[in-house]
Image (tube, rainbow, N blue to C red; front, side):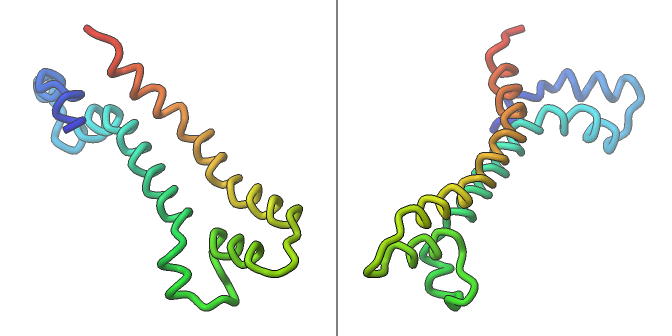
Length: 118
């Protein structure tokens, strides 16, 4: 739905008039317009996989747990070392923060492209 609204037929027709073939139109016109949507889709998929708790908890053994499972194991004991739990939470959020910093420009460009009328 995003591409049908963001990619007018006139752009594809202009590419064909200029003599571009289908692959050239895809890589030069369609892909740059679809880049913000692909960045958001990647971010949502990555955050969902990174924060997944129940499936790794059931399937994986506890010798090599994922970050949410390891944090739950740290806080489940009788002696809770809050500093260790907070350090683990910080290390668990750093990849997400880095991803938002890297792909933030793509999201902003997609928002600005939708906000500009013309």
